[in-house]
Length: 617
Image 1 (cartoon, rainbow, N blue to C red):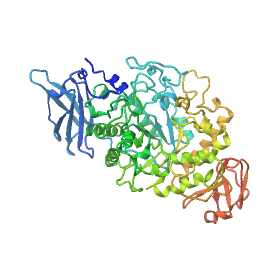
Image 2 (image 1 turned 30 degrees about the horizontal axis):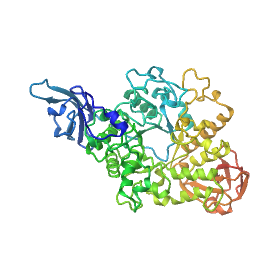
Image 3 (image 1 turned 90 degrees about the vertical axis):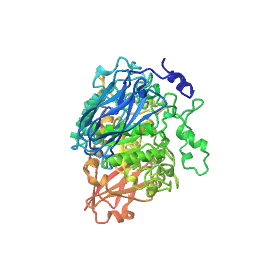
Image 4 (image 1 turned 135 degrees about the vertical axis):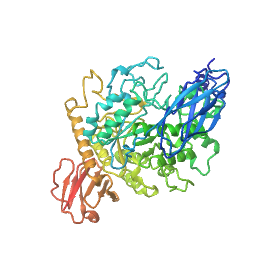
């Protein structure tokens, strides 16, 4: 009789009452294979099968030692601690599961040779990230739209809640488009299998850790996509969820132990209050609610203090880097995780892949709130989080105020200036990802009231400020809508489906307004791509005057002047104030259009416009 665990989760009842789920004698071993020559010699295998814990485990392979066999509450699990010597060679060996009077079970385990030719490239401030929700971008293989046997087999492009059919092949088919736009890195919303009954399209309730969702393709296709990107000099960012999994995850349907997830007497949500983590006066109950409460009934909150949970997550992430050639990670819901574990995880990644980069989602308000999660112990947290960078929500909030707020001493564009001025609290703010919108936020074109001048101005800032810029798919087409509900900002990219009446991937399929915006972004993005000064150049900013914000990006080769006019009327500025950065230059060219400026002693900037000016001698 199967344990009715899903029902227990949905109504919030705790415990492991009833009998354990019936499984095949040897249902799975994860990770299914590994590699010889990894820097960390330790490997923990999770074995699942009917009463597998009643069997004796043996193996015999030169350089591989079975150090310990762990049993847990559920007899359907064993955790095997292996030590793989640096002398162990690639090859296969049998893991035997024996029990007197029963047929011996065997699993052929493989140690593969590492791909020494391909190392993680890392995603840095030299890159431009393009965020894609795979189900909504392009359908390259209609044959995988519906997969029999999966819990959700609905397909309805007219609904924001059902799957639409986008997949990995659709992304691969449009790499030319993305590269032409100036994109150098892709961040895909999670692509692991989400075999949930409803709304599985977004990917954040995964039910497998080692398998690409079959409606997106396969593990092999995912690797082919990354290989194709690498040939173009592009990079792949994998979206990771440490905090929770889907209610239909196989370890939830048959939990190893009660403490695999955070259990509550009744269903309990997180209070979503990051302040409790650093508040010196916080009550412990509030801290616990923040980190141990669930996001939703279908997203069980993983207990990262359980050592088996920690190993399971960390090893799966290392596995994907080694298998597919991942270049970077985006860490979902970072602030809700166990801080000690996340620091341990960061050290493990840096040990195995020094060139790998990662950044955490810190959906918080307040500069200290955001800095609290970054590495370096810069705000006296007491330990190093090992988190190099974050999604810079503080810059986003500042840009919202810049574009829509009323001028004031601390308001309007002064909010942006002050936010950037606070960069001293980071170990390195250039590792932060700057953005205007994403899959959880209102489209920025709508945020600025569909004012194209303001929209271009904000995008110009995005591509010229410090940090790693990120575009959300369709931003180059001024896709709009408010995230109420969030499905409204996850619409299909027109032209990505066979039979679409419009194809926005081509100039002929775009309107004049869309082509103007696309060309604007492409021009600036490719200029940034080809000029180090907008990637790694130093930044100098000036206190805004008359709602005009001026900053420079410069290095030994070039100096770029950026002037942001947030007024509803054009402004003419005298440039004598900026002599510190403009000295020695006599001419200038507008980067957009390549037209020379008539003079540089005074410059006129149209209303709600940001100019990017290359200074010349």
